[in-house]
Length: 314
Image (cartoon, rainbow, N blue to C red; front, side):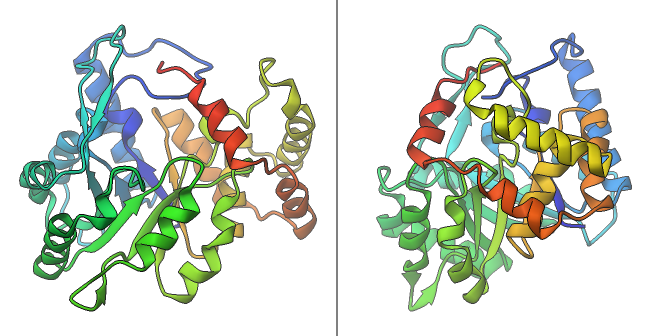
């Protein structure tokens, strides 16, 4: 089982995405009940890798509460530090999250996240960038190295933006006391943004773990009249989907899994229907010809992220 469950959609009601369905979560209690159900369904279907973050609203607390119902050492929790959720479940909020890569923020968020131990296996810098200077902040890096040693954690980072590969290459050279700090990289990768392929072989060679996020390009893999320039991709995806009798979501997830060997691909399912559809990725394999066809739809990272920035929180 190489599918993991991301919890952004389970901890807060809005995300940067193209939403095709609305409604269904009328209040906080209903929202939490749905989120618990998705966690439980994922577990019952064999998922053991769960990714969360303080920036995902209630997600960390929900995962912690859910873990109290489990006695299974195979469950792996990955969390992050660096973003604080600020929207307070207000649909009209103009600011949903605030980023801060300081030692003070790391210590404050670790103080809660450490409750996820012993299931907590991965601790990540949330959206590391060159601009924040976090990869040169010796206090932060030394603190992460200390946590790694004390709790036997994998230290990772997540990447976002046009220069993902630059960030990864820089992180690969970060050492603390002569030892490489970063063990895991959670990267945006999908049919449209394939920039990860520039560094994936190096990561694999250095025995680094790869986790893939946004496998469905925030919804852009699904036919949408707003994106006529993707009509050829939509037609091919629909044809492959029909052939394998699965959804386009499963095709997109399977593509990531097959082109980045031994990676964990995250599902961003917000309900059980989506999760069960995502899990169909385990029922088929894409042919080499199908992979080649899907490879042909890559676009420049600059265009990908410019388009992504135009998506709204919903």
